Amino acid sequence: MRGNESRKELQLVSAGSGCSCCSHEPTESLAATRGTEYALEGLTCSHCVVTVQRAIASVKGVEAASVDLVPGGRSRLVISGSAPREAVRDAVASTGYSLVPR
Image (cartoon, rainbow, N blue to C red; front, side, top):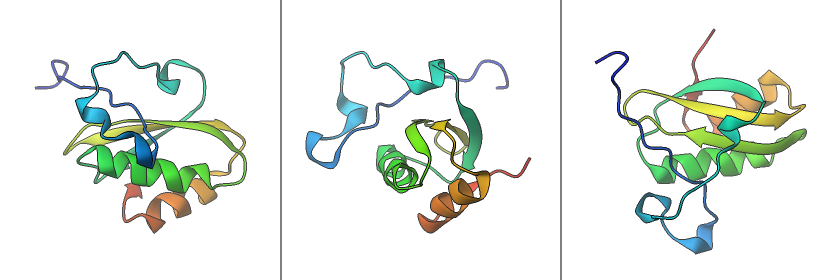
């Protein structure tokens, strides 16, 4: 299915605003802007996305973060700011997920 994958980009939401996978409003993603990209393994739903986003938001140097969810595949994390890779890796690992090694 390479090249013909169907992917749905899910909006990152705050804890009080409900589930992003049910939202029908168009979203703007940081993935469209410049930033450092990382591949993630293990994410399966919007709850996973929110968990990683919260952990990444606490890393010193992160200005903004966006996760493009690919359930069962390699999701994409885009971070703007000056956070070191090691800090990003540790934050992702603290949530039970992992960065894909380069």
